[in-house]
Image 1 (cartoon, rainbow, N blue to C red):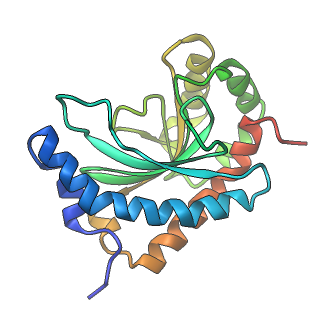
Image 2 (spheres, rainbow, N blue to C red; image 1 turned 45 degrees about the vertical axis):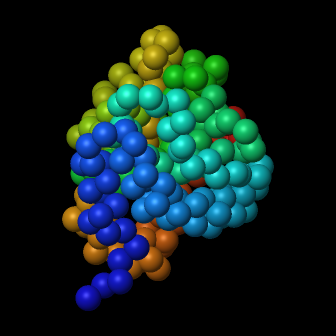
Amino acid sequence: MVNSYWKKDDFAVFSIEGLEKRMEALQSIIQPKFTFLGNHFAAQLSAHGTGEFFPHVARHARRTVNPPRDSWVAFAPAKRGYKALPHFQIGLWGTHLFIILAVIYENPDKKGIAERLGQHSALFTALPDTYIVSGDHMKPEATAIGEAGEAGLEKLLGRLQTVKKAEFLVGRHLAAQDAIQLSEKEFIAYAEETFDSLLPIYDIIIGNHK
């Protein structure tokens, strides 16, 4: 039997009714795992050499009624706040785990980012077809890169330039039933591999390319 890092109970947290009870479960069951991952991967991302990365475990502090449908730890080169910066995330929905590079609506340089990514579209086609892209971090659904194709990527990047609320996410989804099969060592390796494959895209996003 695999001593897995993620358990069924982690994903079941998002089925708990009520804000208070779901938040209690998040804080006791999931956030300690995010804290551990935050410290581990902040070091890996900092070693890339584009600035020191800091972990940000989602606290969902502003919620007063609706319980969170997902949660995450984010990584960005800033101690306070990350949403206006391109950032990485490891997180959970009730159905799957995600490891992504995200540019979300608070980012002030979305037009420039879209233009730079559009000039280096080969980076996306170099990724495995199973990697995903999305235009909305609030929705669990995403499209496999192989399915999106060049036309789908162009559309997402076009929206990023022109639509105020547009976003751009790229990375990997792992179904809950697959995530719970991985030991801690296997999951760490899976996440490290994912970040390594996304860092060249991060370099383009921040303009750190030759």
